[in-house]
Amino acid sequence: MRTYTWDEYYEKFYDWAESTQVRNLSALTSLGSADEVGEIIIELQCNVPAANRLLKKAVEAKLEFSAYDLIEFLCTNDKELATAAVRNSASRLTAEDMEDLYGEVDDEIIIEICSKRNLTLPEDLREEDESDFEEEEFLEEVDAYTDDFTYEKPKKLGFLGTLLAVLGAAGSIDNSSQQRHNVRCNGDCANCPPHYGYRVMPI
Image (cartoon, rainbow, N blue to C red; front, side, top):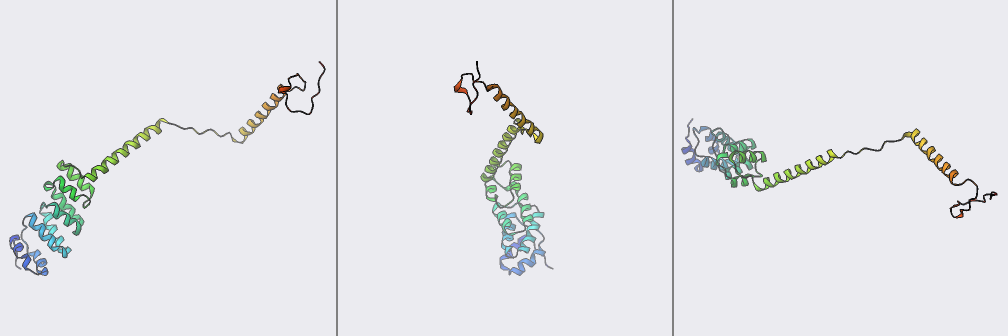
């Protein structure tokens, strides 16, 4: 079976039928630059399994792709392979590239690369972080407040306690009535309760 170097494959690629392009992938003995390989992967995406075969070779060779190529991979190729290609390309990516990749690759990958390269996080991701931080601060303040505040429910009296309280109140009312009204007229009519006629006791 004939083999092809990358230069030979790349030079003849556009002259071949799609079936020949795919078949000759197995005959490749080397890979070219990341830009050329990325171009051919994208051209092969009408046959996704074939595009994934070439992408797998590129990931194993640790080629570093442009953000444009990576976005194309993430949209069409195997997610795991495309994510590995993003990681391999970290040293080539800029803060602007990370803005473009935001939403196409998992946030964890964006954060990982930005942290490793000391790049500014994409604007939307920064806003999410700030919002999460403010929410955490608010929850901490609420927790601190509730820790200092203890609420004790009033104790229930129960049946016996309720009965004793009622009897005590009744006794108090009865005693009060006896103390205030001893059936004798003391001449203080303004404070005399309604009655049906107390006897006026001789003085």
